Amino acid sequence: MPILRRALLGALALPALARAQGGWAPDRPARLVVPFAPGGSQDVLGRLFAQAIQAVTGQQMVVENRAGAGGILGGEAVARGPADGLSLLLATAGQTTIPKAIGRRMPYDPQADLAPVMQLLDSPVALLAAPNLPAADAAALIALARSAPTPLSYASTGIGTNTHLIMEDLKARERLNVEHVPYRGAAAAFNDLLAGRIALMFVSVPSVLGFSGGALKVLATTGDRRFPTLPDVPTLTEGAVPGFTASIWTGLALRAGTPPAAIAYWQQAFVRALAEPSLRERLDGLGVTAATGDAAAFAALMRDDLARWIRVAAPLNISLD
Image (cartoon, rainbow, N blue to C red; front, side, top):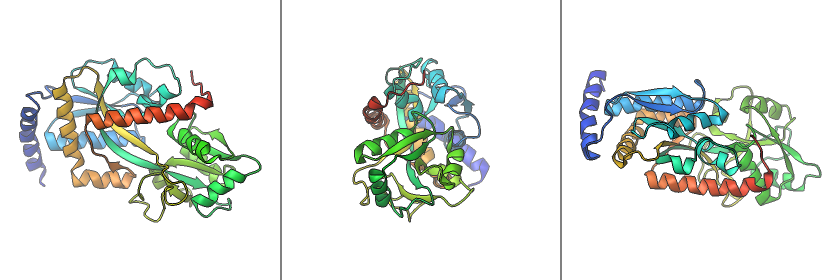
């Protein structure tokens, strides 16, 4: 579609969308707070969404990076900002559920101070094994870890992260003899995994797809179905651990008290953006898939997520403060 025509259609679509939401519409550029530093995966996603929103609605959206404290500073910027519908949080579990589950002190209450808008994206994590580990599939790896005379070391991307808690959940369920070795990120963990210094790890699918330092031994993913970009990799539920699923999700939140019409406006705007084939193609290439659902569904997801991580974290005595 020619750029001029797309811009004109976007400008026409904005008043129509506002009328559908009881007359509410942004009266100045909105900001999308990305609670991580520029250049990371969430920053890339935030900028893709900002561009897509402007394309489908004509509404200008500025990306603002607020890194620090595992993303909590970004969450605080929205939770303590004005409830005018113009400051949106690109939310992950790191600002909404995991910190509360592990007892971390926070300057806001995610459940009380943030208003869910919708889940945007979903991605399973991948189960990796060291090349020299005698396990050709997930079932063999779990049997090996269960019967190991000494603990097998597993990497995570940090204490209290998704990759840490997902492995601890699997450890408790399957009675695995494994011990945690936290890393600052996936790159260093990959190097030790390939060298056999680490036996196994969970890591995000985007990290796997973006790695070019060697051939990773990917045994399974944790979705409820095979991931489209890794069609030959089975899920854990395919015989190894029935019913065990986990994902890393991204959603959208506003400050609590934001007018319902503003919440509905943004929910519809992002639904339209996610329907754009060009955006969905970019997301597929990054290892994430578009999600569906409204504010109530996203709120339910966060409640379930919080309950799960409270259960997993309770015996771990995690302290980050």
